[in-house]
Image 1 (cartoon, helix red, strand yellow):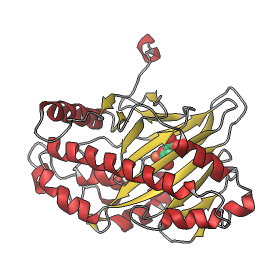
Image 2: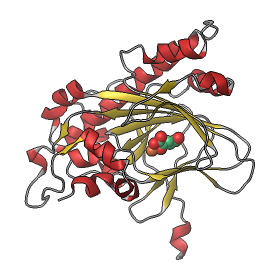
Image 3: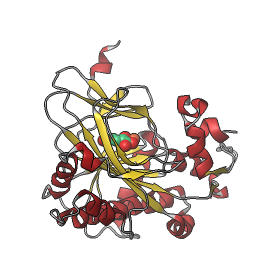
Image 4: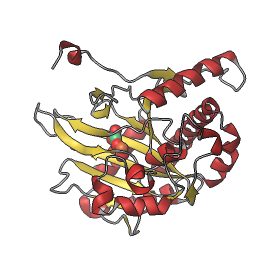
Length: 315
Ligand SMILES: O=C(O)CCC(=O)C(=O)O
Ligand SMILES: [Fe+2]
């Protein structure tokens, strides 16, 4: 190992919170360049968006949820053959991780229904309002990042049809404090299978993103900033122009880590725009079915693949 490997690596941090950040302005063009370079090189960045302070209410709600008795949390069952939605308890394979996952969270009663299920006596009326407000804000950021990235790629004309097909799922996660100072696996190495991921965490770090040279970059967001990650659907859609990073969660110490993720998807067939294919950028993926990709990931071959989309429909 050379000495330079000890250099601390960090994720790019981009401020998207400026009031005059609108298409056509100089600050828009500058930020668009920053976002594009970050997504090309790391497939990930830390975004400052919507205020530099948080009132902590989202993380308080995550704490409320996971502090409920197991019997209560187990009420949240959502069978589905492609996505796992519902409550997932820690397992021997992932002993430090629990989550609650929901599909179609925007403009839907999904969060309200979960709140009603967990607190049938209506003792936590703030849950659905807090989480829904958060989801709307994260979805706004999701769209802003895509607007900037599509423009940088010269394919902004596809944004309207993208918006038409857009859906969002959401996961509330708890990483149980391992009470040891040695790093433990909170979530194993993976790529996200959706289009774009927007994450926020409490004050406990743990997310690590792999750089192209193989080194792991520890994300150190503040509780008010967001982490943006390119998923496999975006990788396939953009003909490999952006990086889709492997990442994991490593935890240690005696503090509980909470995170909330919004995962955008599209549905249907994903086909890269013809503008992104030329002599210099030959077509990397055949058009593919989104559900087909998710199903493939559930096979042993798909699970093992470093890039699901490359293994599924790489040319
Ligand atoms: O908890 C985190 O920060 C990351 C979670 C994650 O990578 C995922 O849910 O796909
Ligand atoms: Fe992930």
